[in-house]
Image 1 (tube, rainbow, N blue to C red):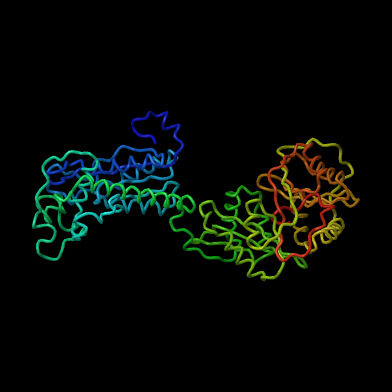
Image 2 (image 1 turned 90 degrees about the vertical axis):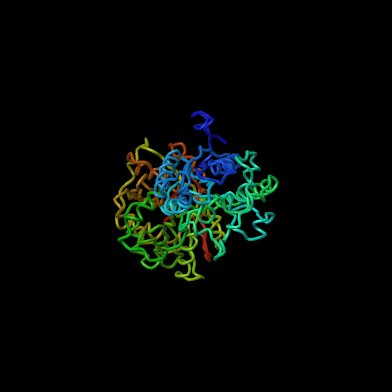
Length: 523
């Protein structure tokens, strides 16, 4: 742990993301305990938590909400809204210093203002999460007389006095004798909520609520042990949950609906957040080709996740554009979208996809089977290549020849896709001898593919001709080892692998003459 006894360099070197703020109170505690008791309570527990979680520990806020002690000289209080503003300021500073959790350890049960400010801060889904803690809620009081008698022992009584003694602190006066006016004054028994209508000294003019003369150091040690054990278990669980799913509302308030052209700005934001390469043109194509199987999760009118199933006549449909906004990851949105897509497509109809290594494990659980390994290669900047005078732009007749080759390879009619690529404005090339290349522009790279060619050398000449200074990306079947070596010699590097996977698919593509696919979103 680190705290105020450390210098700034120690704080800079600290790698933890948990910050702890003790929140005390400065208020009367009868005659037998000092006004700073709640400061001591907060600091004592906060230090134990800081050590356990290797956290950063701030100094205690000495004055908070002690309105119920108004009228007792020496008791000082902030207004609730003042305390909330102080907490907000500290939280925002903690967020700028890259902390992810701020645990507020209240030594005073009356610091109710901590709850609404934490709730308001957390509901905004900021990077920092606030966790308010009232340690007294976590203790085991079964061994106390007040618990056995079901007394309202909530301030300077048996429990708090026992805890105070267990901390090794000295009493400021002998423990008082029991007061017949506490806890009920002969009427309906007092409740904690009554402190919103009556000050503590209305319930008991002596300023304590409970039976302090039943307090012992031994009881305090038992209470502290149970309190800290339960509190640590609680915080470990809650922090783990927040790390896994940080959204305040979880996956609530979501609805699956068909994507519309009006969603394009949000779809492009999803693409940008995922650092993918697609432009609006690809989304336009997909929405036009798959009007009923281009789906998204909408939250308060905003698309926060997408998935598309692109139908290919006579062959398997293609699953693509499975994207979840960063703030919504961890809510199983992608599996839910996939389940809806498969239900709409038909539970026994074939579909395929190209999956990342992480995605492949998810798709296997859905019944997809691995078929072909692919490698994504990228090259930044222009490509110095030999002369490619034998390469020319593809004509409509050339495109028809490529369509025939694509149908033989892919076992489907992808004419709409290849026509879209042919008209994308990127190079569409052939050598006139059975080698074809299509491409499309992208956000980060020009995407090259598909490429069909009778030999690796013919495919390389097409790439040389297509490289006019743009950064390039292409996805190559892993079986094309010689072609991959040649690309590496030209300055390409492997970025990541993909795995082609199929569900209810009984045919695999013939990859002997395929040197680049159209991309994982198209196959």
